[in-house]
Amino acid sequence: MAHRGPKGAQRVDVQGSIWLSVGGESLGGHGRVALLRAVEKHGSITQAAKAFGMSYKAAWDAIHHMNERARQPLIARAVGGRGGGSTRLTEHGRRLIERYEMVDAVHQRFVQLLGQEAMDLDQDFSLLKVLNMKTSARNQWIGTVTAVRSGAVNDEVEVTLPGGQRLAAIITRESTLALGLRTQQAAVVLIKASSVILATDLQGARVSARNRIDGEVAAIKPGAVNAEVTLRTADGLEVVAIVTQDAVAELALAPGKAVTALVKASDVILATAS
Image (tube, rainbow, N blue to C red; front, side, top):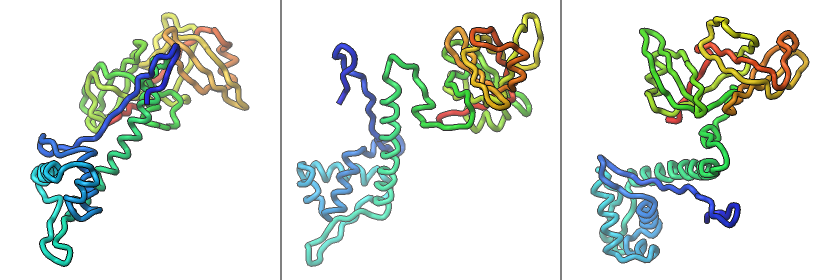
């Protein structure tokens, strides 16, 4: 059921279901899989149809449809005997249904997580939360691949974040192929806080780090030796850096002070949701 939001408005929810196909031809979804389960439970298409409140013909047509398209028999009928014969799932049918139910459980969990995060229009969408991704990298953003420049050994991949910030990553050619990276594809950017270098007064300076993010100090959390510094850009992007307390003092870092985050392209990690 959709929940009521402000002023009685109904919240938009996300729903979805798994549907199987073979060679592009429909095999069935939750209903037909449940029907096969009922056949296994009752040992009879007639009894399974009654349990579903459907006619024998409709149940038989559905099962026959699946049996034909599965390319291996899903049910087997035994004729004769004290009970007058029975219908049971084949081993292939059992494996198919068990695997469907495993995949469906994962799918339903994903839809639940997606519904919790995706359609709250008052909050930014986070694929990381939907995927329940946990990593040691403090900086995690979702962006879009806008360029892939191939090299003999390494590739340079450019990812553009929602606010327009462009980040370059240097990864191996094998990684590009393994991740299936291509333009207009969503990608997760991961950068460890210890890989972020902070600098001030860089006007006219040339640096070797490919990635430069300008902003202001939003917060400083001091520690015994190191401090956690959060930089916030004009479009709201937050970057976390771990630097020494001496560096904080030398740069005179304080909330509101202009600062630049520098990150080498080789320190940028990419991930995909595939």
